[in-house]
Image 1 (cartoon, rainbow, N blue to C red):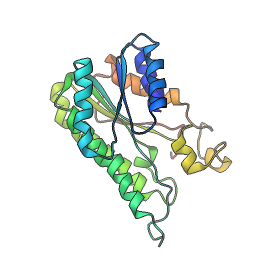
Image 2: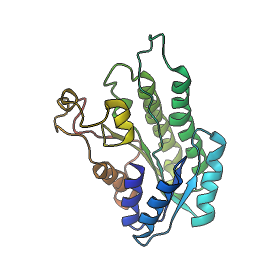
Image 3: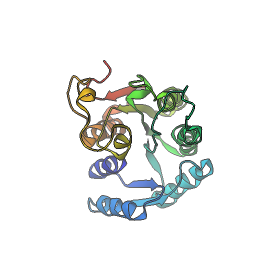
Image 4: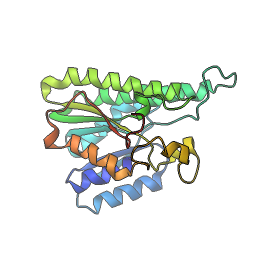
Length: 235
């Protein structure tokens, strides 16, 4: 999702900095593809679980590009869910889920807010689980995404005086490694697809299209919104 969004922004003329945590080769390949569109692009190795890494990350972007106009908070993890009364609940990894999905996002946003240009954009990649708990065993994941929805509204209120817009995009299922962790390899199960009025999972490009719209000039009066791209799942 992050790579596709970065490419769509680059195709619209944005210089792009991506962050990544582990795969040097994949990050380099994404940067090469971004640069092939004619924009400047860099990759910065930064672990969102380390809250102290947020400010150096933003400082690196400013040092290289001179400014920051758009922040897309995309990085997140999922932990295979168990119900909260399960005696084998994996509390260690669930705590890490909250650390990355909430506290890491908060740290990055706090680091970016003072230096974001007036009229800039902040876009959070949430989840449909942020407003609907679709299955048993998603309490913590849904909780992290619901927390981001509330946080985004507060940030929108704080930064509105600077004409900075803040919105959340809530995808449903997408063809990502995260989805495969939840639904398994192969096609999504029929019983899951049957929950969708538009009976398929999202294309990454469809989600990225909403992100790029919110990042662009025509979305300057949209802020504090939580927008679904989920084929009607959960209605």
